Length: 294
Image (cartoon, rainbow, N blue to C red; front, side, top):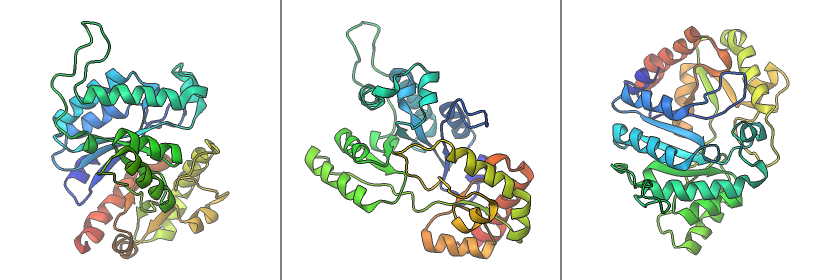
């Protein structure tokens, strides 16, 4: 499917990171991103979000640098804090200190990617070779809080909130001024909705609706008081899920209209255990009946 994306008008393939789910969520995004980059020529591969507190920062720097060398500017990482305590427990990381741990590891990661030596040991040598990409094209900061906005500005990195909150963007801009970061930039999610394409949306809902509902309920079970994200559904049945609009089945004509209005379309062909055949049907309809009109 990534090869298909590379040959069509898909701008980026997005990967996430979750652990201890029992649902087949991706637990090794950097390894998978490397495979995708190696098998493509054009499409950008993005990990959003990479849960930095769960990893050794020098190991992360080495892996990110390797993928960037292969990708030659087609790879990026949004660094995230995470919101599931069980993931921290699984890796032996202190949940109550997660913000401090995040900052400490981010500082090491950024310094390593910029070629600084870490520590006093003669074995702690800088990365060689260094990434080919400017760090602002390689690393970004995720989050949906004032603290996240400040973190991004302090580190001199672009900010990727999980929701279109213009007030949060203004907070980030103010912090950029405070820290002297003249090139601050917010990458807005743009109201993404998990989208399938079908000539008969009603019939397709009958086929994949239970899978989309499962996906919504499982993700919703990870509720955290500080989490705000479009993917979080409050539907209790398939009809409510349809009306909510965070999961959609669109006709090709509706998909063209959506792209024209919002500037993007979020295709997620294997959501919640949807069959590979159904996923491919959606992608082929995009290729044959949506893409020609963009």
